[in-house]
Image 1 (cartoon, rainbow, N blue to C red):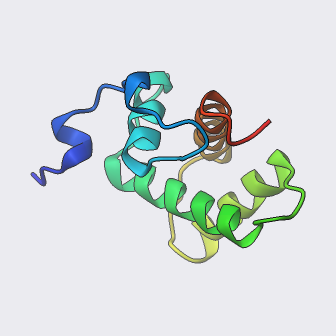
Image 2 (tube, rainbow, N blue to C red):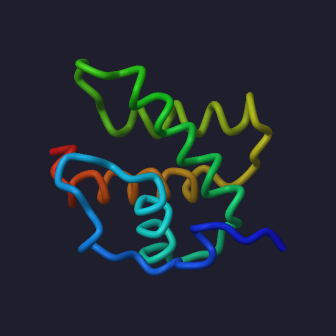
Image 3 (tube, rainbow, N blue to C red):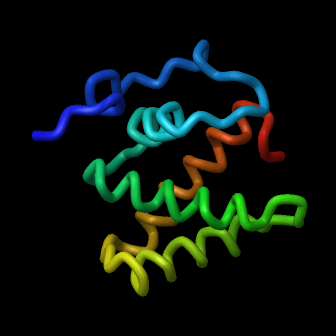
Length: 107
């Protein structure tokens, strides 16, 4: 079993947040803290990385949640061959948006 920062300390701690500055590991912890179904670490990383990719590409542009979720789902299927159910991928994206809202990065 692989041990990393996410598995060794999977508890989300809002005190570690820096307003307006997303943290990768805090995002992963937030997902696991609030998710009501199981996904593997690799699935969480893939979805989060694809989300970050579209987020970064959209810097300075108007971003719609549904567009991001559709893009992440499409990329999960076509590029990385992740066949998690669409509603589960969308739920993980919703949690990433919730995390971004909690630190003032997304309205």
